[in-house]
Image 1 (cartoon, rainbow, N blue to C red):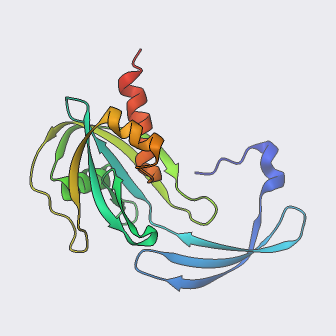
Image 2: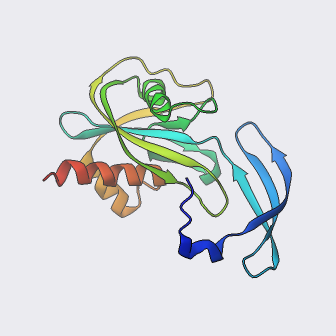
Length: 189
C-alpha cells in the first residue's frame, strides 16, 4: 500500500540494515538503520504485524453489536467492534471479519461490505485493519478463543456516536467504524 507521490521522493528513507530485536507470537520487532533524505543516518524501531479485520454488525433497528473486553496494555475494559488478526499469511480479510463476527458475537451476516482500510499506528507498526459492516444478521452461539473473555452488548448507533464524542469508546478501529457506518446510515442521498 505504497502511496509515494513523485513530489514526495525527497521524503523517502532508505534501509541500510535491519536487526530482529524480538520475535513473539503476534509481534515481531525490528531495529533498522536508515539513511535519511539529507544523507544522515537514524534508527527506526518498528513492529511487524500480520494485519487484522474488524466488523460492525448493524441490526434492523439501527442498534450495533459491540464487545466488551479487558485490554491489558491500557489496563481497562473497552467497548469495541468485533475484530481479530489475520490468521494466515494471505488470508482474505473478509473471511477474517466473518470468523471474528461469529467467534466473538455468535452472529453471522447475510450482507457484508467494506468500509475502509486503516493503518493503525504508522509511527511504529505496519499493521493494517480492514473495516467492514454487516447486516441481515442471524444469531448463533458465541465461541471466542480460549484466551478471550468477551461480553456482547447491543447499542443504538446514535448512542455509540455519543460514546465516541464523550470518550467512552476509545478504540480507534471502533471509532472509525462507527463514524463511517453512521455517515452511510444517516446521510444517505
